[in-house]
Image 1 (cartoon, rainbow, N blue to C red):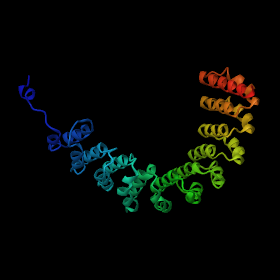
Image 2: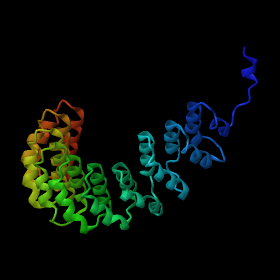
Image 3: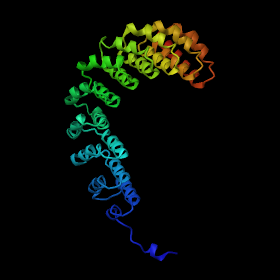
Image 4: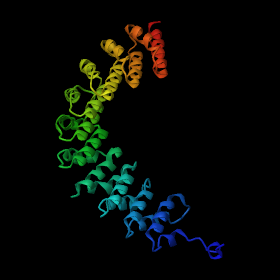
Length: 320
């Protein structure tokens, strides 16, 4: 037995963070958040300046969720790190911010020369809903980077400022990047007027099925009655994911004119489509759906059978 190892005094975190071996330092940083170390913040901030990128990245992760000025400022500065893994870790930690007061440390990076940094700054500001970034987000819809445009769209969606609807509809219909279009379509979900309906129905025909899926879902939030026919058409989309969202939206809209089409979807080969159809028919509550739901009680999928039964009970309750 190695008596030297038995008698060795455990190193403190400070000693381990000064070790010549970068892996020892990295593991020490990784353990810091779970320690009772009084100098945790001081040590983690020091590690954010370590010569080894893996140590810096671990430090950025360790500082996640701590909303103090010095920490948020240091993480924002780490967005300019020479190593991508450090920048990614800092961006992820900043995206967890909840205190709008912390936005002051991030806003200056919205105009950074580097696209990744600009996008990360918008991502950090997304859920903070800081009205003061509205103009910057609106301007960023013209950014050459699709990553920046996508994050700027999300900021506008969270801000729910009607003044941004015109640009969001333009992006939803015309942006060259499908993920940006998809984000814009989703952001239009907070609108209450008819202004956004043309953009959403246009998106039901988008080349990207993910955009069509988002459009079908968003229409269920906006609930324009004149979009029912287009959602019924969307139920024939080549992608069942789009069909599901269209069915879900028709159910939310209680679209009685869709009962026949949804009833037919109860025989679709994908069980998730059949489940969503049963739920939607229950929401609509039209007695015309009873024959299709009675057949669905014999479905091979037990969940479909259960949902069909629940829909029948719901319809019976509305008729009573």
